[in-house]
Amino acid sequence: QGQVSRRVHGVQQSTRVRQCRAVAMPRPTVPAGLCLGVPPPETTAASQVRAALEPGSVVGFPQVTEICERLEAEPSELPGVVLLLVAALRDPRAPLRVKLQALTISNEMMYNGVAVANFRATCGMKEALGALRAGRGLEDSCAITTEIVRTLATECSRVCFPEGSGGSGEGPAAAPQRGELWTPWTTSSAMRKNLQRLLEGAAAGAAAPLTSPLSSCQTSAVLSTAEAESTAEYARARALEASALATFDKSDYAGAAADRQEAVRLLRSVGAISTEFGATVLGELGLARLLLGDAKTGLQACEEALGVRRRVGGLDTECGARLMVNVGTAKAQLDDMPGALHAFEEALHLRRHLGILQTMAGARVLRNVGLARRRLGDHAGATQAFAEALVIQEHIEGPQTLRGAQVLWHIGASKIALGDFFGALKAGEASRNLLAQLGLLGTSLCAEVLGILGLARLQLGDYHRAAEACGEAVALHRRLGSLRSLEAARALANFGTALLRSSERDGASADSAATGGGAALVRAAEAALGEARELLEELHSLVSEDGACVLRGLGLARHRRGNLNGAAGALGEAQRIIRCLGLQDTWLGAKVAHELDDCGGRSRSGSEVGEAQRQCGQKPMVEFLKMLGFALTA
Image 1: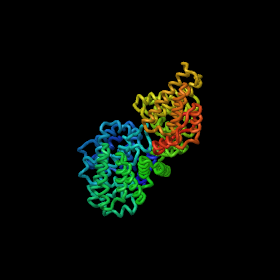
Image 2 (image 1 turned 90 degrees about the vertical axis):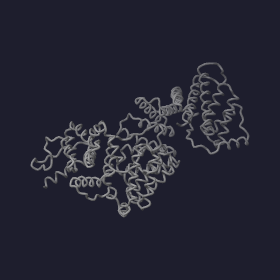
Image 3 (image 1 turned 45 degrees about the horizontal axis):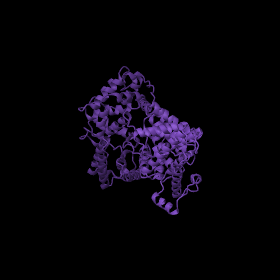
Image 4 (image 1 turned 60 degrees about the vertical axis):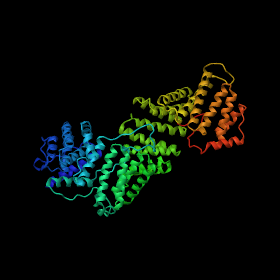
């Protein structure tokens, strides 16, 4: 008996090591006469699984662990085992206990990468897990049994079929994706104990009372609501959350929000909103509202869920960290960037504390921290967060990913704002190379990366290559139909600036009207800057620092072509905008005033300036780098 006890203890210890390190552990050797209940060595894993799925069999975690260790020692048996398990999960006639045992074994196999690949490649696995997660066919079953089945199905689905996200417009204000945010349930030691009791009780035909996986790991604040949890309203709220989960998975966010709103009402009516289940429903309601674009209501639900978790426990968990990210996302959508940054940094601190930062979810938090810091002008802090996110991503996914290209673009933009143009150029080139390897040179992200490259080269004096990069960016914006945007206007402005500077090297003078390379460049520069001015006016962004710089460049181009009246008109308009924004004492204000005097132009009267101020309205929030010419930040 003592030998068998040590054997079981050794199996459990081996399982924990495998979960942490994801490596196969050698099978412990036990004398043949003491291997009580352990199949003989010639027994295959498939035969063990087949016996475990028999209607009258009793399966515990020691037996499940034996199966997993057998598969690690004999990986050639994996395909046969996977087929057996998937067939049991797909069979509509299979008893619920058989499906539960199949899910229990499958869940333990999720720590084996080869097993996960086999599950993913087996026809029907995804559909079977989806049906079990939605509770289809489980309506007449015990509520706790149904909950455990749905939990295990959710965990298996999360590992085998993770949902991805991406896009060039990633930012804290972007709509959150399901895979980026917290999920309602997680497998815990309490859940394992309940599973063990359920499996043993079902085989004996006993209806042993099971502890709820929520209440078994909660504080006395949750346990005090036991009477509320036994009410019909509480059961109805659970049913509504299960329905909402299935509706949400079909992208019907409005339907999911309606079900969860009713579930919240029921929980409030019986005083059960301040429970972990109440926090779960509130958080999922906030998520649905965020995806519907209702950031205000979504924030209210998420903050209430956060408050519940602070009171009853469960905040210092991965679920709590994900909920903080949702709060930050909602605040970013409402333009509360200081509040958003606080929530993101709180989530980041919690992940570091829990030791779960080195994950894709951790990298997402770091990206949001970087974006929020960049919006608030902390470009050094933003660069640091982006760089850390990139290291984590490359460690998990490898270097050649779309997310890697996005983060490199963000690093380049932050380095531009810091004046580190060599660093920006290096990050931009790395991002463009990644996009080329991925076949994504024709995307909007590539256009933005080209804008970074052009601006960095312009600041470094490489005007010819700057014009090439900015010209490619403009052409790509035209092809994608995104020319009517600030990014395109800035690319046009930098393109014109690069051409104008190149013309100075080619020797086109202000008094020369002769044709030639330099003069042609000046004409092209004037056309690009004129188009940039029109775009800014269409976007109601001309009365801005960007607009003043574009008009200054347009005036210089006209002056070089000998059109002094046109130059004075453009420079005069730039000066009126500068006065309107109160920038007379800046580098830009001094430059425009001096160049206007050279053209013989005069600024308008005070009444005209007042009229321009009335047309300005509120000063727009634009990032502008006061360096050379028309260098606008991407």
